[in-house]
Image (spheres, helix red, strand yellow):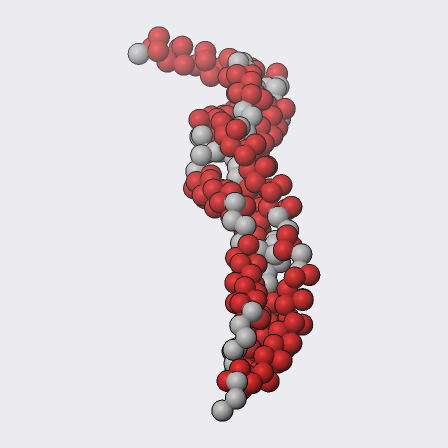
Length: 238
């Protein structure tokens, strides 16, 4: 019957079909790809290498190994560019360090959650570019939604100024307008969730009402004195 190895000499020569994908696999710069996809390639390469050393390998096994190598090469995943996400995470950490400057509401809680997810993703060497880009956009939106606690010093000072006004010198209508603005300013001052825009609006309204106070005319003053005199007479009569 002759040497049984002769039956496998043809398939063995076909092992050259593995040489091309194996050579490509050897030339791949593994640093450019995710560890997970590189591992799959290395496993396929090792299996092909084992077949190359097998003198009795079948052609079907060689073809399967070659296909497995090509598939692993096709499935290599580039490491994600994390530059934008890293910058946003760094910005997020700075914000957390200055947490006292921000309103602690739902947007803050959402931001903290997304920041934590982003940090976890950065530690994942197998993260895809799509996942990194999506998380970067998500974190950017969360940071943008944060609201800083507005500085209310100017509003507080202006309220003090309004309260010190001698209202008897001004017309009732202009005083009423100032009192309304003053009342609203106090509400904003005591509202911990007040936005910067609300504080600014309250300051402008109160400032305008103080500037628009109208001094009573001589007639107004006489009228006031007459009314006071009439009141005094009425009390004396009764």
